[in-house]
Length: 365
Image 1 (tube, rainbow, N blue to C red):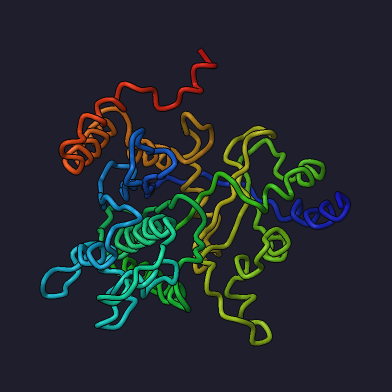
Image 2: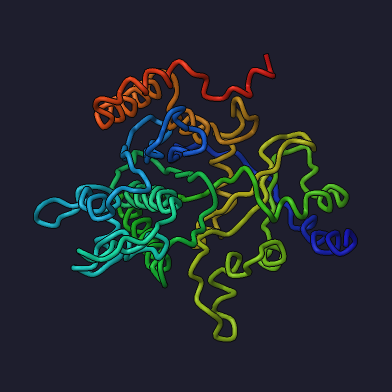
């Protein structure tokens, strides 16, 4: 097995390229992570949908629960005349025909609301995570298509430029909207580059040992190498998650419905054992990988607290996290809402506030 993995990656050593530093603006986009923003007392399973960038500009702030009425949630994104009010509303307008602009029509993972008088079927709480992802994609489209930039800019997304939440071929249409917006920015003499950075990758996890043995990216300078699609396909359970436009077009294969980026393994540090990151570059811009990664190097070289990781992405994570005073306010609002529901039983809530949330934690004292 190891010999096979080594055979797979051996050609990459000759394809490794040095990253030449370039200077430009880099901004990053991050949505709140529900797992990192948990409320201590939360009978409603409240989820915050918040998207900010590395400059602490907030593009979305919503509170959603798994039991929220999807019709009401969808209505937030349109005014009384049906015009979009938010980034998600704008994305729905561009992707869907009039009369069908609803979150359950853009993804099959958000169930359609029941008809009036119909029996309400159980619904998976995971639809809120899908809603959060759709919001992040919508804000990314807004950043590329509507904002004006003073110089060439790299927009760095948190995670791969791939998605399985879009219904049918809507992700293909979404990617075309991104490509058209990038071309439109060029009319203003501005080049907008799009990349996605992941902390983890099944591809890197599978081949890390083989790459170390073969000495790939063990250089004394920042370097990168393009990851062949066949290596990606061998690493994923579902091969279509690694199928790019070039593979989809071969022999009349299925269209590329899920992949928007070309993967590269990138080492921003100058030491042989510095971390390697899996980075997706927007497929139409993969030919400009040297330029994109050169811009990202200037931002990543000063990365803190994670070394050689894009600093703008770390700032966006810091801005997106709801901690301390913000989380206290949200917790108080949840408790106030519960108190209003309990009426004469509100005293039970005070009793619970005096009890430890996790009695088993006493063993660590």
